[in-house]
Length: 600
Ligand SMILES: Nc1ncnc2c1ncn2[C@@H]1O[C@H](COP(=O)(O)OP(=O)(O)OP(=O)(O)O)[C@@H](O)[C@H]1O
Ligand SMILES: [Mg+2]
Image (cartoon, rainbow, N blue to C red):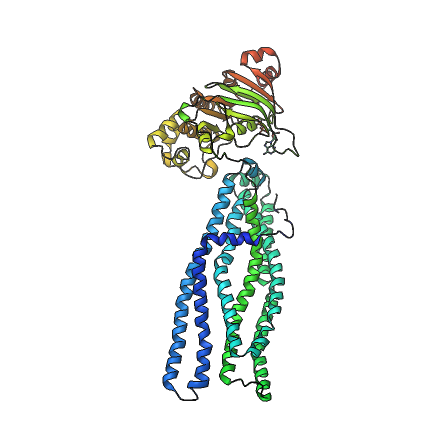
């Protein structure tokens, strides 16, 4: 199975300004955080100066009063610092979580607007993985970035200023290590970024495998094809890859990072050496207090320096995550909703459906047209049956009638309004679809029905179920309408699921109906029940029935025969049967093999 997703281009450019823009709405909070951090950094800096005073003034002079004040100052500054830190980390968590929430919500919104084409091309689990794994992995970066970055930066700058104030020569010696740090952060960051991209891709592979193989359809397929062992092996391999990549991500640059500690251990020694030389040569005396204060500052520099390094690295590896998420946000919406939709009063709609010069291709470059120059008019309240061999474009025509795709040429109208000029809400009010495969949510029957109309009363649900010939069955279940339908409705049989779908449409009560009959044969009794439910549903509505059952077809006001995406015949059952063309041939074939019903 498709275990590996395709590798992206090696260097995916991410606009850093775009990431900054995500934080823009939270400017106020970020300013507060920055202020708090600055305050805490300054408080921290007071310590070495207080220390110098203790060593150089209070202790040698036995000034106990000054000593007490200085010590109280040190303790007080430390306490205030911790309070500020807690408050500040609360604020920055709020900012970080809000940014992630915004991203998740906008990816979901964006994908909701996509046409079916996007979903037919995207494997199951991939979308879920990007929303959960990729945005989830940003958490560490996004929530800690603001705090750590500002915190570390202010501490580093303030410490350097303090160092210069103490003794500029020693400060200069300390600064010599900075270029080494920059180089380190760049190389390790690059490496980490590559590993992260690969890790997220393999995690998406893993999600896709769970989604595809640990679903009911997937289990049935895997078991019956005897591929269980292979699938387990494949999953185990992917999981091992992810584990390996995690270790590599954690270990990337660890040795180089360790050298930072080494550099810092060497720095105080260097300072003592320089101070000793300077004092011996008499070029500006450095007091013991200054030396102690300075080396204290140096140790204070270590943590924020490491934080900055780690942040640089984290930020670079998070670019891989942002790339994956932005990729979805940048996928153009292919169903553009009108800016100001035509206002249509659903109650006064007659429901005349027209296809005018309709052409459609799933993929213009590769396959040919799935529909070519379709011209059909379905007058209000009448039924058009669409028949044709498998793959002739029947379902496609139904999709276009509900604007699940946009035509490549021509248009579809209801009462003269192009579907593209109607708001999605109006369209959903006007056109109801019972698709070839019923999709049920993992919820109770009642919740599934209410998906069609959230405010429906229990009585309305029952009335709809009665109209769909499913009330008897539902009422006989131990939990009745509160029965959980199971994943994708596997709890129910095919015929039952169809009738649940019909009940949903009854609740919506749209003037135009698209019925894509399932090809799967139902037993005669169920078939009759479904048929009656459909007849009741389509009575008085404009109906486009993609039909296989002769009874539906023969009773239709018009029959259109599709062949390779073209309407080759149009007329009533009697006309077409007498004409001796494509329809007559299909009819003859279905009579010869009533069980198989190859085309009708
Ligand atoms: N998402 C897609 N991408 C590319 N081609 C597609 C896609 N969906 C359908 N097709 C192709 O478009 C053609 C028409 O498909 P369609 O599903 O409309 O057939 P149909 O008449 O409904 O067949 P059936 O009776 O088997 O349901 C087929 O050749 C099919 O392979
Ligand atoms: Mg079909």
